[in-house]
Length: 95
Image (tube, rainbow, N blue to C red):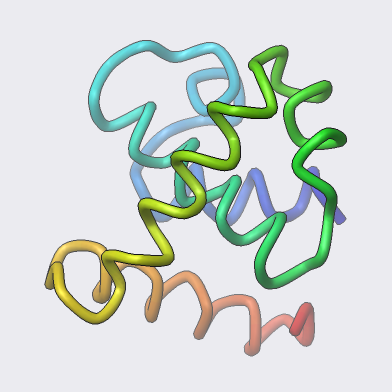
């Protein structure tokens, strides 16, 4: 399921899966943060499992996933991207 979500998020941001995992640019990091949010909040993966998979600290996962969550109702960029990704997940019966 993680691989499928990675593909969906990467495609949404115009990236490939390798860029999503290893990238360091702003768009790549934004995509990664949305991915972590969906993995934890929507699909229920633990922050520790996400951190281990992406070779980052648990603290980073918690911070950036929370940042996305807290920005959904405030930031149009965040709201739009979350809504579009969530619609795609619903379309594929992932949520």
